[in-house]
Amino acid sequence: MSDNPHTTRISMPASAQRGDIVTIKTLVQHDMETGYRRDSEGRVVPRDIIVRFAVSYLGEEIFSADTFPGVSANPYFAFTTIATQTGDLTFTWTDLAGVKTVATRTLTVA
Image 1 (cartoon, rainbow, N blue to C red):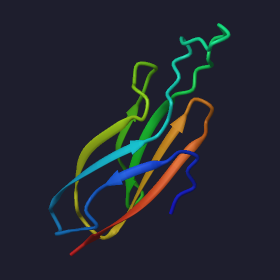
Image 2: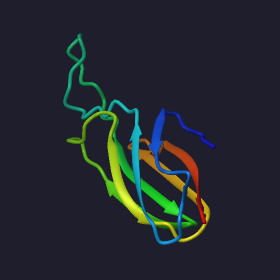
Image 3: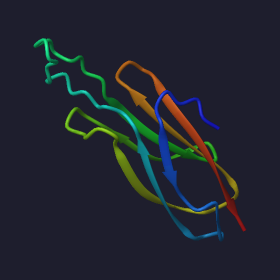
């Protein structure tokens, strides 16, 4: 499920054994305008960045990162978690304007 204004890519296993360490990789397509660049007319391009990325597993936050203008366009995050039980992982990217990009994936634990 997704109500994303931006395209997301999430790489993670669909299933794992209880206690397995699971590697999760994410990427969101976002220009990450710093507010320092100028357009062809010489006007400042307004700042438009993702300021927070958070992931919850079974409703509990397991990873988060606050970002700043120095982060590149299309930010990529990779992290691990331990598979405890079958449930949803919810990925939320929030930009400077408060717009949220949300994606959900299910991890099945045997």
